[in-house]
Image 1 (cartoon, rainbow, N blue to C red):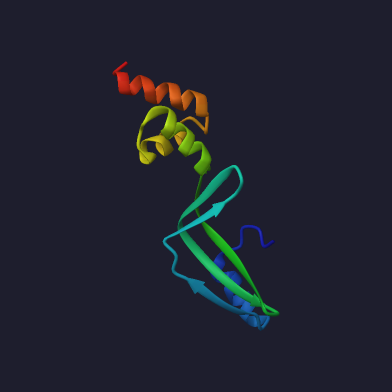
Image 2 (cartoon, helix red, strand yellow):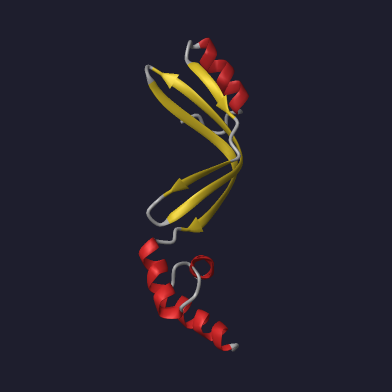
Length: 112
C-alpha cells in the first residue's frame, strides 16, 4: 500500500491525517499460510486505526519456511518411531517430502 516508506515517516504522515497510530514492540512476527510460514525477525510493527479498523504495517528481516502439518508429523512419527521434534526438523529440511523423511529417519536410526 505504501511501498518502501520509512515507518517513522509514515507514522508522522498518518498523525497529520488524524489517523491514530501506535507502535508495537514485537520480537518476531509469524504469518501462517497454507503452504509456508513467513517469519519476520527484528520487526517494526505499526498499527493504524482507520475508521475503526486496525491496519498493521510490518517491516523487518523476512525468511520463509515450509509449514509442517500435524497429520504429516503424526504419520512420520508412526512410521519411524522418532520424536516430534526430530520429525518436524526433518520435514522442514526436506520441504515436507513425507516419503523421503521416513526413509532418511529410518536410515539415521540404523546408523547409515
